[in-house]
Each structure stands twice: as C-alpha cells, then as structure tokens.
Length: 114
Image (cartoon, rainbow, N blue to C red; front, side):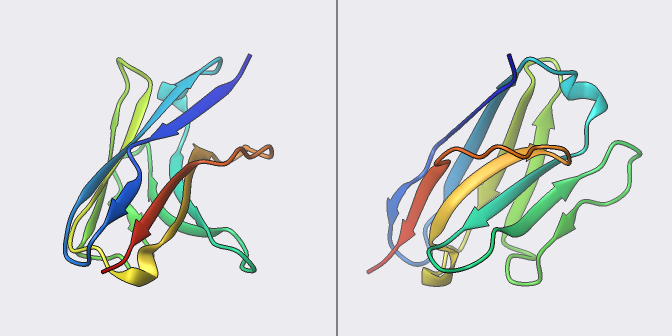
C-alpha cells in the first residue's frame, strides 16, 4: 500500500523557519523523482520543489528560490523541505509525492502570519 505522510507544518511568524518531512512507503522511493507541492484554497496545486535522480540541480518555484531546500534520504524513504525566511504567501498545505501521485491527502499545513 502506497502511503505519504507529511509533517512538520505549523504557525510561524514571517522570517522564521520550518522543516517539513514526508515519510513514504509502498513503492521504490529510490527510483522516483520526488516533489513538494503547495495547495491553497481556490488555487491549483503548485509545484514548489522537485528533486531529480540524475544529479541535476533541484527545481524550485521562483517564489521560493534561495529560501527553500529540498532533500531526500533514500535509506529512510524520506523527503524533506527546509523552509527559511518564510513569508505570508508561503501559507498553504504542503504535500509530497512522485510524478505519478494522483491521490492527495490533506498534507501538512503551514501558516505564516504575524
């Protein structure tokens, strides 16, 4: 059974940091390109960061470049997103997954507000 469990979200003030984690199981994590997405009400799911398998530099949305860092631990089938210098516009539910993920849970909620 394929599972994705996102965690690490919370309420923070602008400028603070969070580290999101994504625990996965049920598929060959090592062989999959993995991504973080952000979902906000009334908007389409947005690709935030993507980590490739061939050593290519990760992809980051322009809005998070220089502030967010995606990483992975293949031994633990874990994906991470280090989020620094958070802004109110970073608020949303964050979800992780491979390219073929088609079913989505609630993710982990990040709220940036003063």
